[in-house]
Length: 223
Image (cartoon, helix red, strand yellow):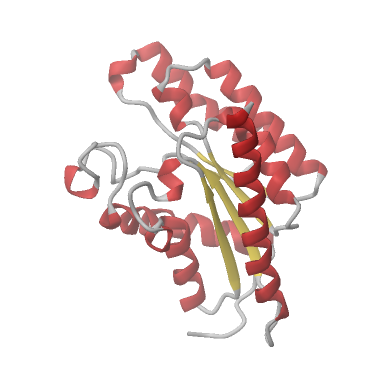
């Protein structure tokens, strides 16, 4: 019960803080920003690093440099699994964002959770975003081969199946060009270091930019 109350208090604090940031951005003497939420786990949060060097905020900097008025909110939480996908989407939907990127599932896989359960959890979050008319996109994950061919195949295919079923944009593998590269990861070999997040941002940038343009973001000035 105490853990649950602490979790609620944490969410409330994050919501108030982010809402204040968004409100300040909207009230500034400039057009309202295109608000984007990245919901994920420690890989999105930037475990072991400051959030300013995490890939979502690096993406924000890249987009701004190209003339896009965008506010990207890093909603990554270490340890998060797909079980919390729906509650997180509901929480951040209160901000009325223009777009959500859902990057959950890595911890499900590392803990050997049911792929069917993961799919159902993510589908619930996708369904809710649709009811709120918030465009949502998927960022996939892959498991190392030591989890067995059957599990890794089912896990990898789950994201593609969800994307096809719901007609969503999908970036297949968040750690593309980063996983298995020791120089791009912390000593634990799991979490990207600062240079790793730079590579992640570079790899996913074209996908994010193309997706946001399709969803309505417009360049306000040329760099």
